[in-house]
Amino acid sequence: MNYRIPFHKPFMVGKELDYIAQAVLNGRIAGDAAFTRKCQALLEHRLSAEKVFLTHSCTAALEMSALLCEIAEGDEVILPSFTFVSTANAFYRQKARLTFVDIRTDNLNIDEAKVADAASDATKAIVPVHYAGVACEMAAILDIAQQTRSFVIEDAALSMNAKYHDQYVGTLGDFGALSFHETKSVISGEGGALIINNAEFIERAEIIREKGTNRNKFLRGEIDSYTWVDVGSSYLPSDMISAFLYAQLESMDKISRRCKEIFDYYYTSLLQLSEDGHVRLPSAKGKDANSSHLFYILLENEATRDALQEYLKSQGILAVFHYLPLHLSPIGRKLGYEPGQLPVTEEMSARLLRLPFYYELEQSEQEEVVSWIAEFFKRR
Ligand SMILES: *Cc1c(COP(=O)(O)O)cnc(C)c1O
Image 1: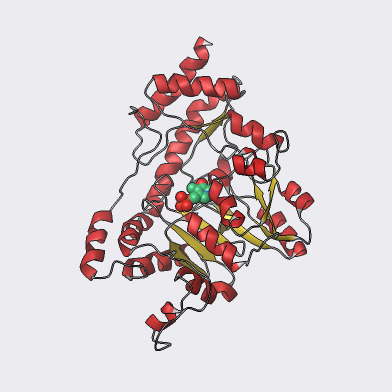
Image 2: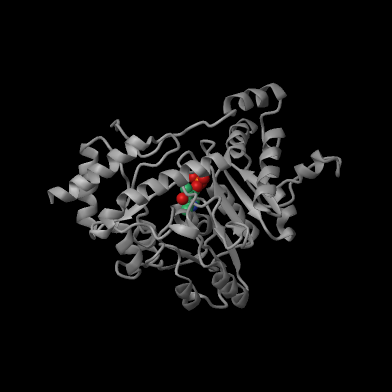
């Protein structure tokens, strides 16, 4: 089905196509060629990060972090259930014991008090997910990690450019994972990055990312030939992908400004409906706000949410919801989780609706989305 106002649309902001042509003409389009290195340098500089490795997805970056932490059978990993499947799967595939904890009602981030309750000496890693451009309570989480001597891996797929106090998210824990999937704010179709904040892990990360070989050392002329030295997989993007991404990264400020305009417009024009008690708006207004590419509203209950979604569809507008709580997925159920165990996650997931949001979304289209939402409540 084609929507008049789709939920999402990929976009170009600058020299994407030029750079792809350049990558091809450079004669090297596999991993770690010129554009990949440029992207990494730009991100390291911009985020003040120790080291950034581009990957072919955020999923890959999370998998790399699981390998670097040596997550093994039975190790406990604490994470929210209100997140994308990859946050969990990266550790599940290492046979970790997943402890899902509930989220906060105000910003839908992992509840640091519940993390503290769950954490113990058996905890090997904590994975906060910064939802919708708002940072988790990192001071508390880092404190818990220090006490239990566990790793912190930040899933920043939905929050590139967001800060916790004066530091970019993804640079506070041991590792941070970014996504450049076409549905995120800065895009390259598929794409991601692993941020490494603990220099001890850089060398091993380089090997794991290159199929478990020391090929990078070889390319730098440090050794005469390269060989198999560790576990690993192929986690590099092609330089053509990095070329597209580089153009987007160069325009990051422009993209952020546009995201903020879209966010602010929705926020301001939905305020009346919020005051009338029909919708709850994100709490991210003001100082925390918000370079995210995502705007959600919370409806009174699941039935209203579903009815509003249907109504917007009938007007040619696609609004979607996520995430279905992971603890209630078939795998979550197999792990022994049951409905009622994470009440905030279950409630918020049932009430949440994401509105159309993309770089080229026109203000007139936003106006239309908002006025159909208002119309929906008028008719009830
Ligand atoms: C999108 C997303 C991912 C996965 O990103 P990919 O780049 O598609 O692998 C992981 N975590 C969260 C929170 C996401 O929203």
